[in-house]
Amino acid sequence: MNYETVIGIEIHCELKTATKMFSPAPVTFAKRPNSCVNEIDLAHPGTLPSLNKNAVKQAIKACAVLNLEIDPLVRFDRKNYYYPDLAKGYQITQQFHPIGKDGHVSIPTSTGEKIVRINRLHMEEDTAKQFHYNTETWIDYNRAGTPLVEIVSEPDMRNAEEAVAYVEKLRSILYYLGVSDVKMEEGSLRCDINISLRPVGSEAYGVKTEIKNLNSLNNIKVAIEAEIKRQSELLDKGEAVEQATRRYDDVAKTTILMRKKEGSVDYKYFPEPNIPPIRLSKEWVDEIIATLPELPEARKERYLSIGLSEYDATVLTQNKDLSDFYDEILKHTDQTKIAANWCISELPAVLDTQHLASAKNKLTPKNLADMINGIKTGTISSKQAKDVLPHLIQGENFEDVVNRLGLKQVSDTGELLRVIVDTLDEQAQSVVDFHNGKDRALGFLVGQVMKKTKGQANPALTSSLITEELMKRKP
Image 1 (cartoon, rainbow, N blue to C red):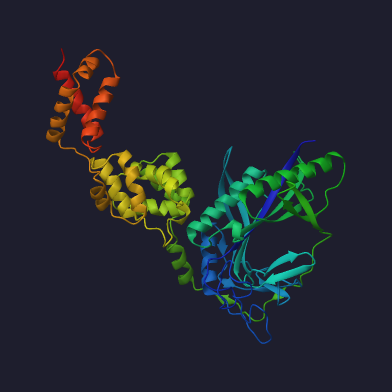
Image 2: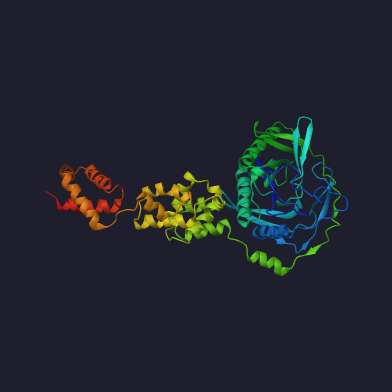
């Protein structure tokens, strides 16, 4: 039987804030376990939560660009359940009044653009992290209380390609917004995928399974494909798909049962009594929306408008650090295409472009722009520029490098002609070969001039002048 796949995605995204959702403890990664916690994170008696204003601001940004209706009244609820990674025995979340609802985003697919509806975006706190060793479980509370938004899609995706495109689109948007660092490998963004199958043409939903905590685009793709295969084989044999929570095993390349879901769990939600409802000022919300940064789609359109190809514009916008660096270069040069070529082709060969914004990086946009301008004006050749770049990465000034290495091209016509005439006089046979139609003769003569000038002759100008001089010596 042919089946249609139905996919919905829940994205958990850690917000980029200095402190936690309800406490002043710092938000960190890879610090010594349990070194970034305080009394509120550990639920000491008598402690009270205090809402992080910046976390609310970040959530509003995300709501605005995902076309969500923003609730001006912020309210929280308690989700009661006991797990060792929640010291309080409950989680503060937004079950009944999410800050954003009824949004949508457009994703690229092989058949064109597709709209995926977003049911809601709500704020909550992250849990601690558990580490399982043999018969012991260790808990690191550094992550406990980290601000999160959960973005819940409608079941609008129909295959792994669309699911990956959706996650990739949201990941790019949230990163450009500065809402999160979206590092999936560090758990800053992770996904739960809900999958069900139904006969083609049916409107009723099948029994869904949930795949928890997928933390890479590749794992999302292969996990969905593995689960579709598993469910299809069950249905083809006339067996039932059980509602369950599963995990993806990247060694076995299949999904593994974690627990069965017999029905909905009663979390005994009720309004969080320690955080009264907060009315957001319309002026504050409007100010946040008015100052949103340029998003990847708008940036790509801008690049296309200044003459970049579709490929160049796409590659640049896929890496925000690289794109920001490129924009800074354009403040010092009008050579848009040459600058794009260097950013896309040459820089990755010698520099980790993921860290262009790092304080350790000594390559400045101004220095690279000076080099690009030098190529355009003929001060140095493109080949010489490749020798210059490593020095610029060490923080050296373009002009200083060119002068110290003696790379400045000779573009003075009179000076070049003197060298060319001497060369032609010395290489009479090459002059004859040229006029006999031997193409290599011209290249040889250019090489001789380059040798005499220690590589500093302008290659294009040299070739042109040699050709003119050779025509004068036509037998």
